[in-house]
Every structure is written in structure tokens, then in C-alpha cells.
Image 1 (cartoon, rainbow, N blue to C red):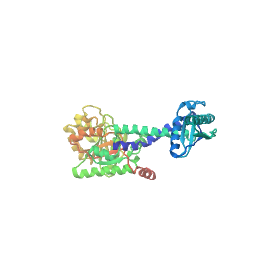
Image 2 (image 1 turned 60 degrees about the vertical axis):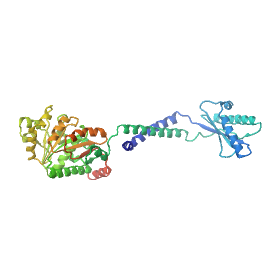
Image 3 (image 1 turned 60 degrees about the horizontal axis):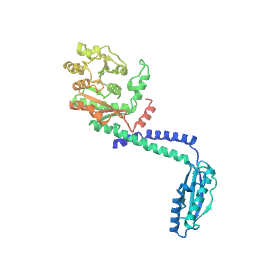
Image 4 (image 1 turned 30 degrees about the vertical axis):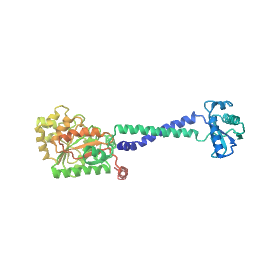
Length: 431
């Protein structure tokens, strides 16, 4: 329930906006179609001798006023409302009638007061009530009558949308906070990147031949987060001789490829020699992001013994090389699980400081698991606000069972408190 309330707070803006839209629609209806109402008040004096008798007489008068027979003296309709109340602890009774017509309201209030006086006085055989002030024709309608309806609609819709939102959040709570994602995955969070959609969209708007490097589109915060990943990679490289790393995600819509390309570019900026390998033969994308296209790929190297130098392509970034994906075959997973793939890795480890693999979506576990078993580690890329705890555990469970070594979590589209500050800094530094 705590997660549901947290998600409800994130959606509070939408709840308020929807409530305001309904209240505005009610306001338009009220001011265009709902008639104004007028209220007329007649005053009747109770002639009781003490407080107890006055209270009893007031209760009796209010009870009698509820009978429809007393309203026969005026032209009553269904739109009129009437009531009798005592004015504080005094001996005054206020006979109130509201109607759509000012004259009808005054006439009905006086008629009800006369009928009430006649009935009470007749039943008690004495003059217990008498008219003090006759109701006059009201000059102004009831203030804030329609506004009350608008406020009621807003309050009701706010409660309704809040309950619906809480029900949806409780039914299928999405993981938003990095803390919750880390606890569910039982992995540390390496990086939190607020948004890569804007970076990818800005990159795509350029002409393919004139596009700058993808790294140049990232702002200050993203650059800092990329440095955190490279720091973790270099520490693991010293401790465990980590040289190969696979980026995996549940689907292809989590900015895995974009993050991997910028990570490779950051490693090259720090002086490392990096090979970027596109293993996603179902939806290859790296060739667009690095702006390079090869005629041969890893499968050629494994199946035909083609040297890596003939298959890889030099990119615009110094020390960054790219091994393209030209195949789309079902035997790729078997080739990657073979001994020739392990021998191939041993060869390229001597040529490059780091080898980064972009994997297919993790739903295709025959491919993802095959390659990650031969590599030194993998980097799960999780997009916040997209997965439930159950879905995340189901995704990572096969990796954990097979003992795959995870570097940590990379969370994209994360909610970062300092995001506004970083965006302002990006503007000032012209990123």
C-alpha cells in the first residue's frame, strides 16, 4: 500500500487536472443552463412563556411545516424547497422558501407562514404564533448557489479519481523509485539517468551524415552518471580482470543501446580501446547510433574464420571500433555458446581494453543467456515506471540461477531530485 500511495502522489497532478476539467464542465453547464434561485424569508414569533415551552413549540412548528397540506395556499412546484428553523435560542421562527422565481418564493414563504400560524394556533386554542415580518420579494439570487455545485463536483471527482488511481496503483504497482528497484532486483544501483528520450530524439533530428556523436547530446548529469559506470568497470577490471560486458534489458524500449554507445564513447574519452559489438540480430540499432556499417559480423568470424580486422569498423570516435550485425539466424545462440566463441573472445581481449555487447531483449533468453555465460559480466538496464516487482524478478531470475555476474543496475527514465538543477546547468553550458 505504501507503493500505491507513492504512485498516487506521482499521479496527483493528473487527478487534479481531471477533477478541474469536470468542475469546469459543470461550471459551463451551471452558468448556461442551470437557473438561478431566489430565497424569501418570513419571520414568525413564538409566544411561549419560558425556554422549555419555546423549544417544544419550535419543534412542533418545524414538524408541522413538513406536511405538504400546509403548502396548498400557494402555487408550489417541484423546484421549490422550503424549511423552518429557529433563530438561535430566541422566539423567532424563520420560514424559508427558495424558488427559481423571486415572486413565487415570497408568495410561497408567506403562504407557508400563514398556514403554519393557523394550524398551531388552532390546535392549541390560543395565540401561540403570530406573523412578525412578511417575506418580501428578494432582489438578488442566492449567492454562490451554482458555485457550490461546482465545488461539489470538483471534490467528488477528486475523491473518485483518487480512489481509481489508488486501486490501479495497488493492483499493479510500477517500480519508480531507484531504491525499490534495487531492493527488488537485489542489485546495487550504478547510475540513474533521468531521460534519454530527448537525447535520442535530438540525435535523430540531424541528417545521418552530419550527426554529432551521441555522447555530445547528453547533459551534465548523464555525463556524470556515465563516469560512475566507467569507474565501476575499471574497479572490476582491476579486481576480477573484467574486459567484456553485455548490456541486457527486458525489451528494446529501455534505451539500452543508447546507454551502451555513450558508455563506450566515455571509455574511449578516458583513453581505453573499446570494441562495440551488436548482438541484437532481431532489432539491430547500434549502426545508426555509431554511424558506421560493416559488411561482415561476428557470425562470419566464427563460422568462416574471417579475421576480426576484416569485420570490425573504425568509428568517428578515436579508439572505438564497431562489429556490426548482418545476420538474422536461429543458430546464432548455438554459435555463441560454442568453444569457438570463447576462443574468439580470448583473441580480442588482447586487442581491446573492453568489449561491450548489445544484447537482444531478455525475453529471448536462449540468446541472452548463451552470451552472458561466456562474458565477464552483464549490466541490466531497467526503465523506471515500466515494470512491476514481479516482472522484474521474473526477468532476472534465470540470470541469478545460472550465476551470471551483474555489474549493477542502470536505471533510465529515473526520478532524480537534482534533475532541475542539472538541466539548468546544461542550458548554461550550452549542452
